[in-house]
Every structure is written in C-alpha cells, then in structure tokens.
Image (cartoon, rainbow, N blue to C red; front, side):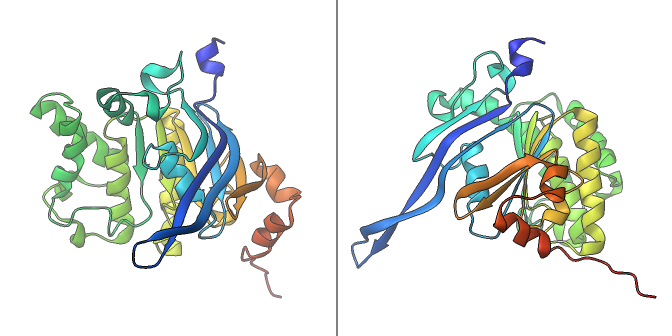
Length: 277
C-alpha cells in the first residue's frame, strides 16, 4: 500500500472553533462560545465516520469547518482529497481556483430537503447546476449524467421538469443526494440527512446512502443526534458533548460496551421494541 492510500482522507488535529459573545449597542465582546473545543479525529479512506451528539454540541460546526465554510480558531484540518492525496492540503493554504477544484471532490447532503432545494428551479436545473459550475462536459454529456443520477437514486426521468414542491420529503432528499453525486465526489458530508423525514422513509434514505457509498467507495462524514440511525451505516463513531469528543471507537464497540456516561445516556434514549405475549 502506498503512502497516499494509507493516509487518512481527513485528518483533524486539536480543532477549536470559538465564536465571540457580544453585548451592548456596539457589540462589545464579553466572552467566547466554545462551539468546538479541541477535538482530534481521522477519517480513513472509504469509511463512514459518524459524529453523534445532541443539538448544539458542535458536530455540524465541525463538519462545516472540514468543508472550509468556517475557519478554525486554532488546530488543523488536513485533506488528502483530489489532487492532494500525496501532499495533504488545508483550506487556508489554497488559492481560490484550487479551492474550487477541491470542492468538486467534496459535497454535502443537507439536513432539510425542503429548504436546501431552490423552489424556482426544476429538477433538471438543480442537477445541472454543479455540472455547469465546474464546466463538466457538453450539454449532451450533462443530460446523460443527469439521467444517470436520477436512476441511481431511484427516481424517474419524467420528474426532470417538475419543481421541488411537487415531491415528498423522501423524494426531495433523493434529489439532494443526486445533486451531491453530480461531480463524482470522493468525500461526502451527510448532515442529519434523515432527521426531517418520516420514520418510514428514513430507512430507505439510509439504505440508499449506504449502497451508493459502497458502490463508489466514497468516504463519508455522517452527522446525527440519533445513535440508532448510525448503527448500521457507520464504521466508527465519535460521541460529541459540549464541543468535545468524549468517546470514539468502532461502531459495535460503542453499542456493546460504551464507556462514557453520556454515551450510555444516548443509548438509553434509543427506543426499544419489546414484544408482548
């Protein structure tokens, strides 16, 4: 195995993200909110790494920083993705053109399929937009790619001229997944991708993400507040609490023998079905 293959796809070291707390009319800084407070983890190539914790614990802020949307207060995020497999890159060390090229290999599936799709764009326009931005192929090539994407997420090509409001929540999230796959990314952030969906639809979307991840050997950062959701998709899990990672390990180990009290609390909140006589 060469060094590039052995190197983590994402390497986060002592990451801290602090936001100023302001008071008064002039917005004087009165303190700092430690959204992320010194966390370290690596995401290996081809695995699904889940960060689990309650709302406000810092998991989405962490994902946004990995994607280059929020600059770290301190610490480092090294990305071995795209052209940077041999020499890991940081967002701060890249020029605008290099960042755009890297973003093609990193995509996001957002939490709310109702707000993450432009209501004034058709499905065709939504799926074609990333291909146009990254100057991917001719119109004929883009049309073929769009048809392929719809087929991959289990939607019909007859939906191309429809608008987001004409779809159910599960169908919208399938469109969001197709959009994320458009540029053939190596790394995907799935930020609470099923929390806005009915329980009956959640399993379908999880299975779809799992099948596509295996098919393309993608690396995935999966964000969730629900341990039950990540149990069967994640290879490793990090449990986050108040900006810190309190426990991290293989998925089955976390479920079978949790060590931290907060992890035990999360597991105890997972609904259990008890058959009745």
